[in-house]
Length: 173
Image (cartoon, rainbow, N blue to C red; front, top):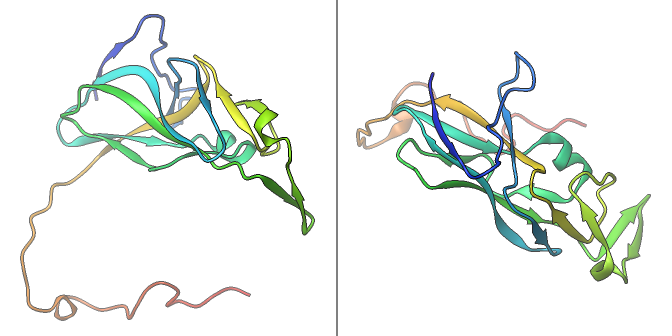
C-alpha cells in the first residue's frame, strides 16, 4: 500500500525498525512541556494522504507507557483517509502529587520543581519536557470495512446471545 507523506523541515519520515513490526515510531516536531495533569496536542510534523478504505491508528509506545506517566489519551487515535492536516498526538501527563511504594504513600512536596524527559525511567512524577525528535507514539495502518445498518425490532432474535458482558465469564482468583 502506498501512503503519501509531507514532512515539515528536517522531520524524519516514519520507518519500520524491524521487518516484522506493525508500527512505526513518530517523533515530536517541537519542544513541548507537560505539567502534571496537563493534556496537549504534540505536533509530529507529518501530513498523510491515506488511501480510501484505510486508516492510520496513533498508538502509545510501550516503553513510554511503562517508564513514564505520559499517556496517549484517545488510543488508538484514528487518522481518516480524508484528513490532510498535521498528525498530532494527544498526550497527557498523569503525574500525581504523591507516589505509592510498597503500600506507603509519599507526598511529593517538590513536584513543581521535578522536570523529566521522555527517556526517564521509573514513572517519575513531575513535569515532562518532550523535545523535538523524541519518539512519542507509533502509527499503524489498518484496512476497515464500511457498514450499512438495518434497523430491527430485537437484536437478540438475530443469531445467538452469549448472555451478557462486563464480567459475564467470571473473574480469576
